Length: 252
Length: 310
Image (tube, rainbow over all chains, first blue to last red; front, side):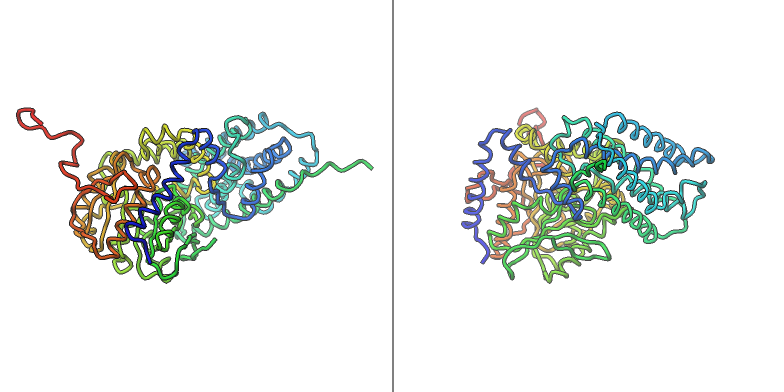
């Protein structure tokens, strides 16, 4: 039987008493309680696992090295395709945006190279090389890197792939948010994902409006298929991050 | 976590409360999620109702289409979700963006409605709203997601709330990274580009409607809600004192009390949809839920006669 007005007042009173007690706490305590109790819900097993992992584990130099190597590989693959536009006619609106994107991708690589506290564990670098190879193989990036573009489905597929790179690879949703203001590497991750957000505009606009003979449903399917591939690679990478840092092989 | 498959898109929802009880649905604002209504759910379930919260397409744990979200699809998806859950009809509540969906749902699916609660909503826009909307959009695409969220702070909250929560709000902004995606939020905002005024349509709404408007709401100010009051015959407008656009966050218990009071009135057949205007009583323990609003509530200045007298 739903509550009448008197019962509503009792319910409100119960919640209000709890609220009043909370309001009496110092603001720092309230903020800390909120920080520890805010409900995070992350879709996808790998992302949830990584999120829980980084709630407990610090982002040490090994983890930062692995993340940096992964992002550099992705940015490198995208830059390798973007450089093709430099050799093509520049009299399109898209050119100036894609030109800017190439240099921003290269800038991000440079920043990561300078700001990452590189680990001395060589095994991380050989593992990263394997990921790098898988990235090129599974995304078919080489298919786009070696030729000039026409306004057709091939170009559309590349734009969908670069959209997936920019939208799916998102560390800020899984690494701890506690040290964003104090850790230069986390700040860099935050800033480069802001950059991704700005860069993605070009892809979004072109994917929506570019004049290729594809229906809206066909466009969504192409974009979703590229997202799925990149999501799979990223999820695998996140799960590998949650495993123990690989030790360098012992000399026999 | 339960999902409803709508045309190959996943819609995440939470449905709780005693079986067979009347259902109350909450529809999110732009960057909210189903969990934003956690306190509402606990209180309203405690009052003996069932509560359905869900993430709109592009939000929270629901699918996030890469290219396009259709603004006019939101009410259709809710109808399909209610059908999926065998909900014959419900009280439909929603804030801001969600408040618009409340009204559109009321127009298009009257049989699914027991009552409507549009909060901080609108049926048409003016130059000020368009200008704020453009700023939010530009902030999102030119600077970034968290900048856009920071732009929302002075729009959504009063100065007192911002001051009292200055350490909490940054945590809220950072936490929102975990359930929002930049491109999806952008698609939702872009979907509003196709928005067309629908004031004429709301004249069709016959079901009991409680319209709630924060006193200092700068985004959807008083006139937006006055239009609803004038055009929905079975309505009442209640002004929420000392609160802004997101009064559902600033003063949730007062909002819950008003919603529960409204539902009790409708269920007990004592509801009077007389297009009157009221002011909510901020005293949560008072048996008087609201006071009749006298005077010109459309003006922020007292009336002045020809001789300057007041």
